[in-house]
Image (tube, rainbow, N blue to C red; front, side):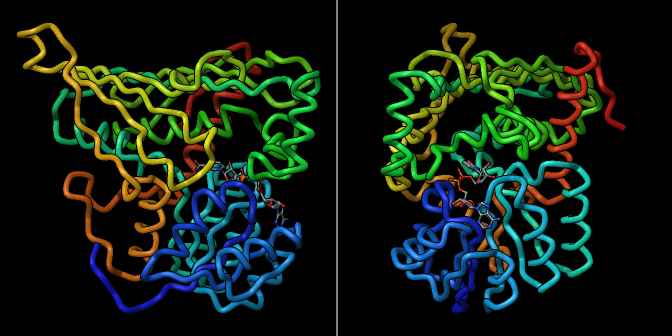
Amino acid sequence: MGKTNKKLKIAVAGCGRQAWLAFFPWIKEHPEAELAAVADADEGLAEKSAAKFGAGACYSSWEEMVEKCDAEAMIITTPPWVHADPAVAAAERGMHVLCEKPMATTVEDCARMVEAAEKNGVILDVAHSLRFDPGYEKLKSLVKSGEIGRVYQLRATYDSWVPDFSKSPFKEIYDFGCKYRLFGSKDMGIWRMSDPRTNGGVYFDHGIHYVDMFRWITEERVVSASGVVQHVIPGRLNEDHASSLLRFESGACAYVQGSLCRVSARGSCDEGMLHGETGCIKYKMDGTWYVLGIPHLYNVHASVWMFGLPSFMVNQWMPVHVKYGKSQCMFKRQLDHFVAKVNGSLEPHPVIGESWACSGRDGMENVRIVHAVYESDRKNSETVKLD
Ligand SMILES: NC(=O)c1ccc[n+]([C@@H]2O[C@H](COP(=O)([O-])OP(=O)(O)OC[C@H]3O[C@@H](n4cnc5c(N)ncnc54)[C@H](O)[C@@H]3O)[C@@H](O)[C@H]2O)c1
């Protein structure tokens, strides 16, 4: 990325786990960015974040921050039901926006965000951060450069395990975790499973990453979707297991599975395969960083193998080298990309080109597809068409 002398002033709305993991440390060490302001409904947390990461100003509401701060860009790391309003307000004040996923809880809210950004001529990107993971970047680059021909099937399984926090001994662990903010969040992120304002469970919270990823890899439209949504651990309001089948315009199909109840080792939580006409790619992403929760340790993540022409000679999957190290952390790269884009110093990716980040329109399409999967489930898994 090219260099400029300008320092981009960034405001961050929401000082929870994701802000601490994916944004604050990287803004702090970025030579062309500075943390102009932070806001969180939890005033103490906003103050603590401002002090630790050197924010210029600190607010207890995003509304006040948007009104008063002098930032040129805003990053939104509040829960999904607090994405649309701050994004619209920031765009109307002429601020560029990088909003966490899922972009918003409804397609209507996403449309409001896109409209505000387009009307005010500001950037609106959605933090589908996996696009910046070197492992997924490798998948995209291999496909884009034709290594496995036309892709006709994709599969992603995200199988995590979050115990039933209402029962001993996990209840005690939960209480302890909340008290000492072990997971970086005051409620251990339990809103994902229990808050109706999310408008969805694990498929909306995490499955959406693969919906985005597979649309990005194939560069195709999803024309229909079907799914099964389950509540495995009793008492959870939002689904904790979901399986879906997406059909692309070429006839290619994708299977996406998200789960919070697969009891297994973390190392096998994030896996998948891409089938192409002339080869196959399989991948396994290391989930240890979720446990560690320390951004600077998140540097060894992806394993990728390909079965292509040389593989036929030895009947073996060939490992594909994926870059690693601190500079490869997807959150750092995502922030670098956003800063360069706003500062006008972005250089296109040698293979992927300029369309690396997820745009507002792409983020909206991802939300539409997730809701189609939910609609399918409500209709006994009938296929739902997306015009
Ligand atoms: N891209 C990724 O890999 C990734 C990973 C984790 C989370 N996320 C996303 O990041 C977002 C935040 O998740 P998190 O894990 O940090 O949640 P969190 O609960 O840890 O943090 C959210 C923060 O927002 C604050 N907040 C809530 N309502 C507010 C309001 N009205 N005004 C101001 N502050 C408010 C809360 O007090 C809390 O500190 C979500 O959209 C989530 O899906 C993305």
